Length: 60
Image (cartoon, rainbow, N blue to C red; front, top):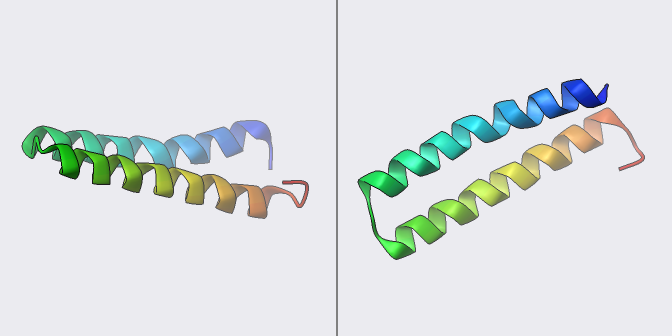
């Protein structure tokens, strides 16, 4: 896989998650809720990056 396709997949995984977190944070302005949503976003982003890395090459 090329770097361009990896970046595209990361963006496809990140943008909907970020949109979801933003909508939930705006609809429930609670500090603990926002903190939990940000953590969930980071976990999804790391998992997506790890999966792409595993599929793309063994060098990662």
